[in-house]
Amino acid sequence: MSYMKEFTKGLLKENPNLVMLLGMCPTLAVTTMAQNGLGMGLATTFVLVCSNLVISLLKKFIPDTVRLPCFIVIIAGFVTFVSIMLDSFLPELAEALGVFLSLITVNCIILGRAEMFACKNKVIPSILDGLGMGLGFTLSLIVVGSIRELLGTGKIFGLTVAPDFVQPMTIFILPAGGFFTLGCVIAILGVITKKKPKTIGCENCPSQAVCKQFNDQKESA
Image (cartoon, rainbow, N blue to C red):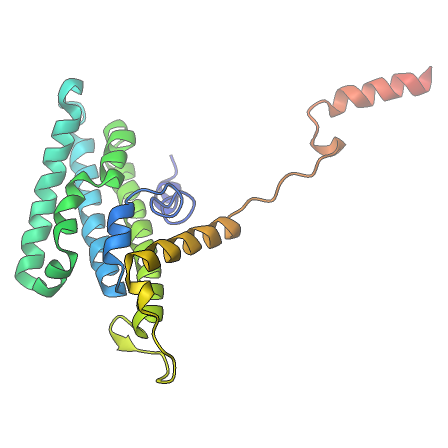
């Protein structure tokens, strides 16, 4: 198993947000500012990595009949830890993220990786999978949040970057602007990562050898 492949797949090729379309609620809700997107992404990454680690370690001891409840309990423990830390050291960010911080517990990205990967693989690949998926999710939140904040307020990470004569478009910090921005980012990523189709012709035909043999026999006759 390639460790690098497990880490990089979540960044672009299997980005949980922009390719698999998971975790849409926090993406649309907290990306009114790039700063909020960064905070939510890093919090989710921490929970994803830690839960993947623990689930991979305990996979042989968790009965199949209570597999999902056990996963949720493990994830909820790390979410509680993250919530306490943010409330203690970054209360403004915790307030901005609001209820979506607690809802990390049932984030389909985390549950999906636990069910599809961590409970079936060893510790190191599970950690790398969680880290890659988490960073991919974080990058998508930062991109969407930066675009919405720039167009909606003229700022990025709270710093004014737009000239004074440019009027902010408030719609981009509203739900409609979130849907529009996310759709555009997904479309652009789809165009960038689109694979070039194979050229149709004899060189790509699996029966090339048979045809060649038939043509040779025909010419010799």
